[in-house]
Image (cartoon, rainbow, N blue to C red; front, side, top):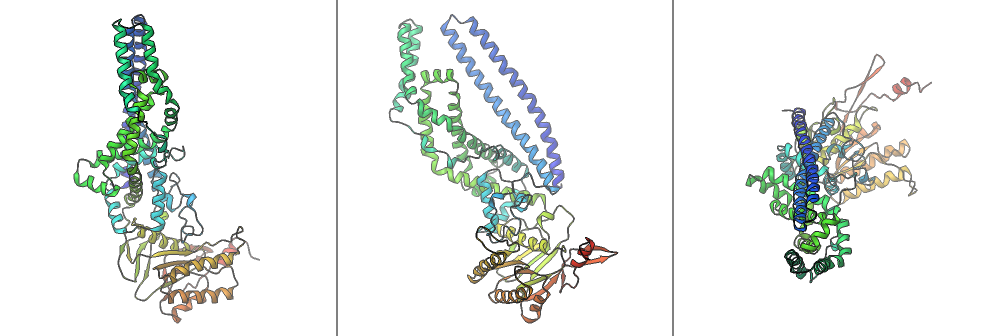
Length: 590
C-alpha cells in the first residue's frame, strides 16, 4: 500500500467514526437537558420535605456529573478524530510538496550557525517544516537539536525510526492528542514550568479532613431526628465552612492556575494511554517503547491519572453551590490540598523525565513519518573509512517533484570536489542536497539517497554570507569571519566537511582567485573535505597541481534560442556559460 492509499483509506474510516460520535454527542445533550428538567420537577414537589429535597438534589448532582463525565470523554474522542482527519490531510498536502501546515521553526534562525542558515533549514516551507511533526514546544526543540547537532548513536536512532514507521496508525493517535495542545493558542505549558510552589499543605489539615465530615453528617442526622434545633444545626454548618474559608485565598490561587496543569496533564495522559493501548498487550513491544521513553509508561500513566482525578475534583468546586455543599460535608478543599501536596512530593522529580521522554518520542515520530512517506529513503552506514560516498542523491524538498538524482564521492585520497557550471544549472541545489544528506545521516534520520557510506562528518558551510549593519561589518569582512570559523574547526582536528559556494565574492577578481587558491590549499593540507562551487575556472587548476582535488560540473545547452538544463553532474570542468545569453534574452544588453 502506498502512503497516499494509506492516508485515503484511513481518512474514510475516520469520517465514518466522526459521524457516529456526532450522533452520540447529540444523545447525551438530550439526556443532560432531561436530567435538569426532571430534577426541577422533583424539587418542586419535595420543596417542603428537607430530607427528600436534599436526597433529590444530591442524586441529581451525582447523575448529572456521571453524564457530564461521559459527555466529556465522548467530546475528547470527537476532537481527537477531527485532529486525525486534519493531520492526514496535512500529510496528503506534504506529499504534494506543501509543508506550510507544519511549524518551520523560524525562531531558530541563526546566521552564525555552522550550516543551518545556508541550507534553508528554518525558512517557511523549508527543511525543518518538511520534517517537523512535533506537537509540543519541548518536542520541537529536541528535534531541532538533533537535526543541528546530530545523535550520539545514529544507528540506534535509525532502528527506532524504522520500527515506529511500521506503526503509523498509532502515531496519528499520539500526534492527534498532542495537537490539541496548540502552540498558537498558548496552551503549551509544561509540567516542569508549572508553579509547583503554590501547592502547599498544613499540619492541621489532616485533623480537619476527618473532623469536618464527622461533625456535619452527625448534625444532619441529629437534626432529622429532631434531637437538635434548626439554630444549632445552622451554627454547626457555618462552623464546618470556617476551615475552607480561612484557606479560600490559597485554594483559589491554585484554582486559577490549575488550567495550566490541566491542559498539559490531559495531553500526557492521553498520549501515554495511546502507548499502553497499542503496545501494552505485547511485553516485548512495551519494554521497547519504555526504553525509548526512559521511564515505565504504566507507572507514569497511573500517576498522571491520579493527577487528572485531583484536577477534576478541584474543578467541581468552581460551582459555588457544589463548593459549599462539598466543603460542609466532605471538607473538600482541605482534602484536595492534602492530596495535591502528596502527589507533588511523590512525583515532582519524575516529571522532567516524563516530559523529556515524550518529547524525544515526538522527534522519532517526525522522522518515522518521513520514512513512511518516502520508503525509498535509506539510513546512512558509518565506518572508519576516510572515503565518502553518496549514491542517487536528491534534495528532500524535491522528493515530491520531478527531479534528477546525482552521486557524490570522495574516494582514495580525494578531499575536495571543485564544482563549476553556469547559472541556474543546479550547483547550489546540489550543495544543499549533500548538506541535508550529512545532517540527516548524523541525526540517524532517513537520507534521500540510494546509499550513504563514510565516517560521521561535522558540517560547515559558507554559501550565503551577509554584511551586518549592527556590527558595522562589510560583506567581505563578514565572509572572512565565516571562513575563520570554518578554519578554527578544521584546525581543532574535527572531522570537518565543508560546502563553499563562490567564496570571497566581496573582493576583486584577482584577490578572489589568489585568496581562494591559498585557502583551499590550506584546507586540504589540514585534512578537511568538501565541495567548493565556483565560476572561477582558474581554481580548477588545483586538480593538476595538488593531489586530493578533482573537478565536476553541471552544464546547460542552448537549442533554437532556448536554454535547457539536464541537472546531471558530469566529470571535468564546465566550458559553457549562459550569463551573456540570459542578459540578451531579457533585453539587458545593447
